[in-house]
Image 1 (tube, rainbow, N blue to C red):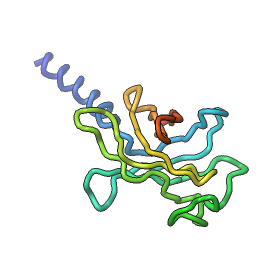
Image 2 (image 1 turned 30 degrees about the horizontal axis):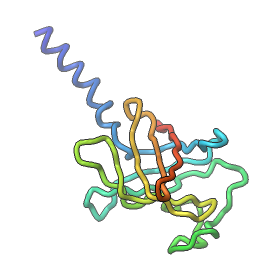
Image 3 (image 1 turned 180 degrees about the vertical axis):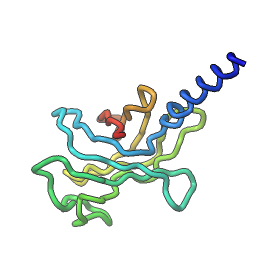
Image 4 (image 1 turned 120 degrees about the horizontal axis):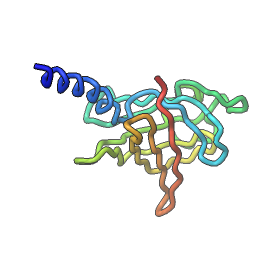
Length: 145
């Protein structure tokens, strides 16, 4: 009986941690070059289904941030940065805690990069990597409660 209770308690404690091994949630974006907190990004599953993720800027924390994405060259050109969709189409890789195949937009320069997302530290951090050809840039975002 005690063994069963201990096993159930261990499972109950492990389930929230396992559920967090996903990029879905609210993240604090920390710039890899300056260490400055720039904003909060909300990542969600696309309403259309198919397992793809998208992410929008939920909060701007940088004082000198631009109000609109004037540097964007696609359908996001001139749109407000707050609420701007910056992550599109990332899907979970088979058998891995990795989401790939999508894109991420840098609203400061309007460039779009290939994307991978990898939860770390039990899901409390998210490795966000943008690629152009063989070159990449990595940021680590912090999960917000």
